[in-house]
Length: 440
Image (cartoon, rainbow, N blue to C red; front, side, top):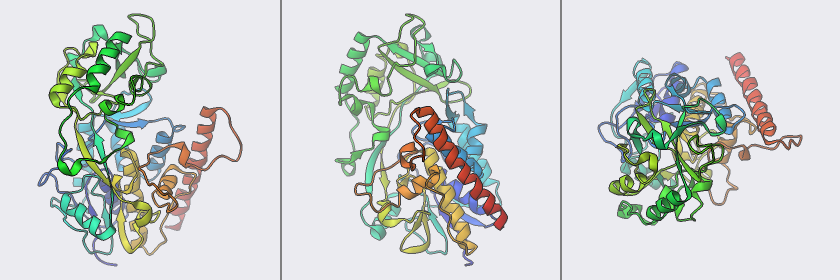
């Protein structure tokens, strides 16, 4: 093999894949169509731009998300390195200043001499000994059509982003700072409480608010559960939000000394705390309706919206029919897919798939067998999930302990059980990393 490896897309998966190849000493061409051609969701030309949220989920290694991130660190993850450097307070979660995060990754990629960034739209999967398609769920229409022609029908979903408000426009007389269950710093979240009447009035206006009109090609598509627009969630029942993003458990309003009836949490978007994300409030309401309805929340009555929520189409492969567990295509050796287009759901899940696609591309170039991490690891479990032909109704999947094989011993305490699952998987990954180092 002597052709230069190609990576399509400089999202989280693409930069990780290119980084793995460069770290192994291979020159790689990384194609990114922005800013020549933008997507419906991205706002900048920076690499690994975060669209829906600035949260990368829990940090604790005894959590599924934390376990995944620890495994990524063992593979020298570029995204984890930059996330740690751009972190903002968010209780037990890892949240980042999204502009700083993308800027750090962009600088790392552009300053790596073995990575050649080419700003050009790729309209079809190119020939090559090693090609990694990490175009993301918002691949250009031309490339998406080429993928459909080659691999048949794919799965289309809607994804939605939450609004962002100005920090100094939040009415702190109607809000309070506290992390749920006091996990993390006391000012990691701003909580916007509502009493029963306020919540019921808000609910009534929300379910009747006008939504943005969808394009014809987007109609009659599925809404992905992990990014359910708040207005659609609300139609499932008046208390659905109170058991979801507006749950009041673990919080006490210092103004009343009682738990609120419902709570909207705001999370810092940047280190300066000048912008806050409405946690769990992904939406497709018209912009004017977002302003009107969300301003009914007392703490947001004078809120300045820096960005309104948007909704866009995501496309996923029917991966069990197409991909092996090393993210390679069954019918074409040397062609890999990575990122959310494979059916892994979440920022870090996407990045981890890019790590493994890049890592296995390196092994292919070295004429070595692919590495598939054990099912006890989170990365290994997800890679097996997306390639499991026994799944009849394939759906996107994020990190969770349900995809791991059970422990040999029964542990009733959930915290202890999760801790044991995480430690078991992490130890297996550590041993594999050590074995890889010794093989050279």
